[in-house]
Amino acid sequence: MPSSLLAGFALGFSLILAIGAQNAFVLRQGLRREHVFWICLTCAGSDAALIYAGVLGLGSLSEAVPGFELAMRLAGAGFLVWYGARSLLAARRGGAALKPDAGAAPQALLPVLATVLALTWLNPHVYLDTVVLLGSISAQYPDPMIFGLGAICASFTFFFSLGYGAALLAPVFARPRSWQVLEVVIGLTMWGIAAKLLLM
Image (cartoon, rainbow, N blue to C red; front, top):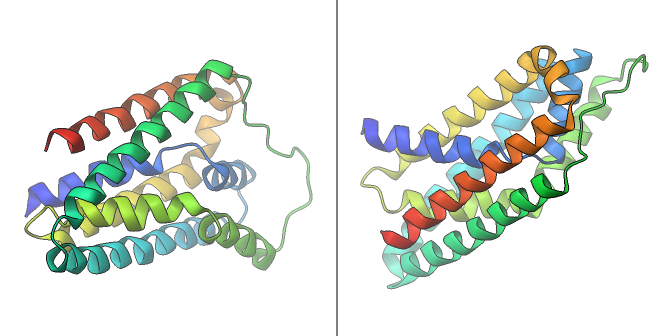
């Protein structure tokens, strides 16, 4: 059971590390210290719902349809190869840096939550990551619900660390080189997970 929890946590954390509009928004709001708790809770709660949708749906589907697990594993590996390549290309291009709105007026809570919900639920990659990929991999464990719990714990850990730790990261991510290093780490991590899926 602990191995499934740790595996879910590790994969969930590595997937959620990817730089995107949602993470950049959480970072920006964390730097501004505005509605950090509610933003982090909304992101992590959305992830929890999507992760368990994948675990419950794909777990039963993989038992009912022969060959479904293999197909999903190959599709997941292909997606991770593409995801990793995208991160490595972004690192090669460089030029990204976090520039929060200095001196901007405080935003109301509801518009901020509407923005973060749109960034979460209207992003097609979130369904590939949390529903398809995590759901298909969880089916390979004897206790997929524990695997899903590990991924959910990773989501809560990541978003609350990101939101409340943003002030500490401000000097670091003001430099484009920091984004490049993180993109390389993400890209290589995605490729490593893809290799593991293909060799299972």
